[in-house]
Image (cartoon, rainbow, N blue to C red; front, side, top):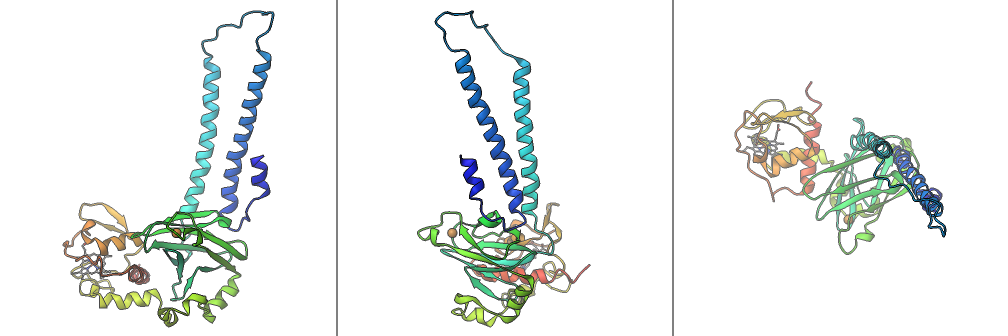
Length: 328
Ligand code: HEC
Ligand SMILES: [Cu+2]
């Protein structure tokens, strides 16, 4: 039986999400199996019990309906669906909201490979190294088409969309290597868009960070060897791209708002609406400045569309993030 196969060939539960997702899956599977068996069994029973006989005993009563029975069937189904909904909702919230102390890693997906960028400037291709027992938040974008980041052993999956950031988090519980797949058809070599997550003990992870192994592909990349962190690169861009003409980083208001302490907070717009300053908001503010204009400022910021690459954008965001601790 399918259920039996699914239980027998279960993938390793290698993250804190895994058992949560599996439990809900099992609940849906087994309640469905039970009701399927019940329905088939009932049908067979009725088939035999009410078959046409040579000598009719008596005519079956003409039944037009049975309110109590109909309501109770509807009621049971409603409760069943609501239980699924409730656990789906609780799990979904856990899956969506990364803990505040997460280790942040940028992910760039492209035809047909994965690039992982750490806050210290380290980059890896097709290999993601993470510590065990610590939440990891991936901030992901695509350089070309739709992709989807999928780690079956962790039971996590998230679409990756060009020109916008999506995120995903997990906490690995099993050491070793776990495969990463692209789960959104993205062209000829989609099926070859493979990578792995390498989970290390926290101590080994720290040692790895210090030792500076850059991965097999990174050696080919001159900028990777330089190990400039995204935040440092962003700081440079902040003046080379001319952001500093209008924005300060020390709290002073200029032509534009200061960047000190804005990231992760709410900002009020001209129309009175409030928005959270996150990766997508910053990106939009730079690429399409007039889409959301901050209250008290003129809509005079020029667009930087076509002048800032995805990588530079992520670097600017990383830099703006570092300015958030300065206030409070
Ligand atoms: C000519 C001046 C000017 C330049 C140059 C400029 N900006 Fe702006 N920027 C503004 C103004 C004015 C606003 C506020 C009005 C608005 O939201 O459009 C703003 C708003 C923003 C916001 C939203 C801030 C908030 O507090 O919500 C971000 C993010 C931003 N700019 C990023 C940048 C970056 C990054 C650069 C450099 C690549 C840059 N800006 C260059 C004038 C400028
Ligand atoms: Cu892909």
